[in-house]
Length: 106
Length: 167
Image 1: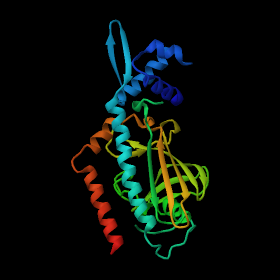
Image 2: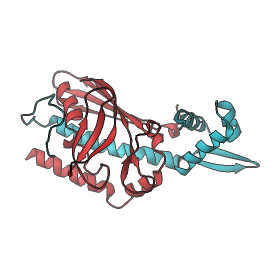
Image 3: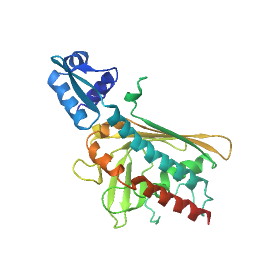
Image 4: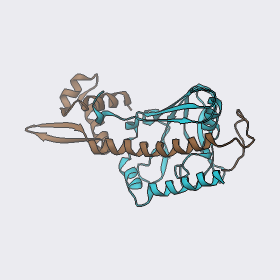
């Protein structure tokens, strides 16, 4: 998959609504390829489209992007808080650098 | 990119009262002691989480039945200052469980930096970037985390852990 292309499209879209042919002319990929990436992003809820006269414009779906980020934000808030607690707990006789492959229960 | 809509990274930082070596060690070698237990692959809980200490090393969990499941790979390894990992775990396309897709094009990246703030404190900065790569399957993910009690369940477990540690 042309992930770099999808990222480039994503960044172009952040500049505001844009048509497929404008996207394709700004990127070194064919128009059908751009359409395919847009479909993937749209299915994922990250991009939405609208009609402006005869043109179809694509733009970021603020809800989709925000939700995606919010999910990971919550996950790391939780994880980092628990990490802080674990790191500040007095070591229980453990040694730094113990070998991988230990069999320790949580 | 100034547009907040294009922001697809999450940044966190925490100052821990522990020397840099310990902070790094707890992060990479004892992940199962603090990782939210609800975040694992498949149906069974994890028993241990491993990060192989070298670039290209695997990041994986072992579940209670002894099965291994990949989470990602080590992209940078500079103990005790920095580690970068690829994150391949995303919402399933057709199932509610989290799945690992080792296609690098669908992986986001997690970078963690450790900075000593005196002898007994460490600033830990985390950046989880390129999140848009997990776009596919997003609707399933939303369904999980919008569900009743999804996050409150994690908070409850966390509170138990902290209270247990203080006992």
